[in-house]
Length: 320
Image (cartoon, rainbow, N blue to C red; front, side, top):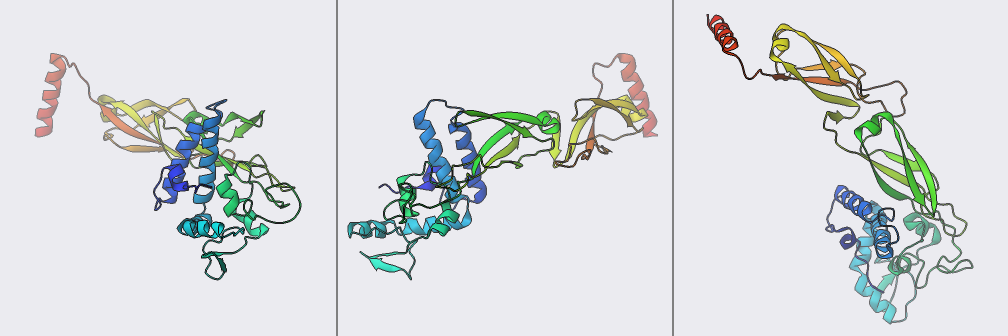
């Protein structure tokens, strides 16, 4: 049985931060997802390996135990050669010893808390955490030892546009040959999660299925900058309107333009707040963030001789 290097699977170092691990997982999951590679069994297997690695490394407690396991890998091999058959140990110094390796049995309750569903798990995964060599005793399906365990929660990255984040949208997901239409509510932002109850990994024995979480990523927009529920838009204003005052059209996230009053002598870069014209607030009907219009003064070009003379006259007046 080959040792599974979960860090190598995700392409991160052993001191990688939680953010680095999550980012690496999302990139690989998007690339390897079966919906993107239909009928590609090799890629599907890699997708399972990536999910298994993320299941362990994304949880601080599981990661701590896995790191301890890795440090005792050679001890475990010696123990197996000596005829051992118990699930590995985590290097617990208080456990019994055989063939030079410390070990203790992981009970079913702890096993469920650590890993839940075994569907698609590697032999390495099963052996070390209770379902392989030694495993749990008792009747039931092979490899599960009769244990009832909740299935693993699964994660799926989903990209949506800025407009979809404003108005809400739907996505069609495929699972076990079935289609699911998922509603994504208005106001979601990058980092929002949509929970699909009992659509995750299959349960073990009579255990319930886990949940599926859609991790939302809102793609950048060329018009708007988003900060939470607030939005900033750059508004071109001609020199004359900036000096004398007037009105300009301002695009809003809902797709409609509104007229904005520009005060006389408005400076370049001035920001004007438009209350309740930003993004809808998630799960708060009729509540919105603010829209900030940032003025960008546009200077005239291709001036006529007369216009140049008028500007020179103005310059002379300002110099007095």
